[in-house]
Amino acid sequence: MTAERFPISLLDRSRTRAGEDPAHALAASVTRAQQADSLGFHRFWVAEHHSVPGIASGHAPVLMAAIAAATRSIRVGSGGVMLPNHRPLQVAEQALMLEALFPGRIDLGLGRSLGFTRPVRTALGVEKYSPDDFTRDLTAVHAFLEGTGPVTAMPPLAAPPPVHVLATGSGLAVAARLGLPVVVGGPVLFGELGALEEYRRSYRPSPAWPEPRVTISLEVMIANSPERARELLLPEAVALAESRTTGSFGPLREVTTAEADALPERVRTAVGRQLDLAVHGTPARVRTELGDLVRRTGAAEVLASTSTFDHDALAAADAALADLQT
Image (tube, rainbow, N blue to C red; front, side, top):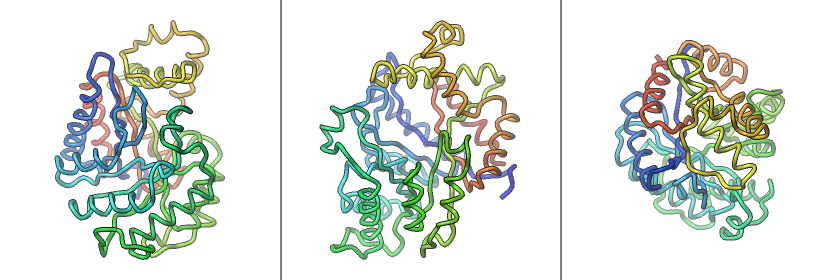
């Protein structure tokens, strides 16, 4: 793989939008996946978030089934199923059922995030979840998928779907011990790469993954000018920045540069930090920056978690991003 050519996939979080019914966000995810399939993207992953006004997707396997049924060849996965909220046997059974229905097209991304707020965590029944808990549950899911668990996860398959670990910090160490690929994002990509180096150094080869594998995940936006690309990222960045003040991650709303500049200083600072963790600009600039990140991190793949308020602008950005693969 060279810096000029690398697989690109999409992570879609079914973002709700001001003025739209939340159910529309799920339909939009299916439509976006169909476009991604026709554009030649490698994978299309969906998310799990509970009781978050800005995200309609609460159960990734259900949405994965709808998307896989509506597409032809693109791989469909979870970014991710959060193990604190599910029993390992159920996670394995859902993945195996999807793989049986859509052979060779299912990915199982697993994470350890808890609910967004304390009331959500209480409703889910999980207040604490340690790295040891994650190791235990991840090992159990893998055993059920491989047919080596204490009971048989149905339907048993000779080739179960691959597991990827959504990893930060201790999650990288867990993935290395179990011989699993990782998906990393955020500050891990733009700071010191010691954690990734340790993952590779301590990696224990597994039958499915004899070598360590890293996918990098980040916000990516392409437009005709750097200014427009930055503006298209503002709805997501502002929503996230405001959530840290209000405790509620709300629907996307249209935000112009002038409106963002008029926000309180604390919010503007948080927005700036978010934009610093994104790659955005013209196609040529994005190609160069993504190529630099791929070289720097040794990544095998880019998972772009792009979102914006304008559906048409998002579709155009996806099309431009797909062109970078050729």
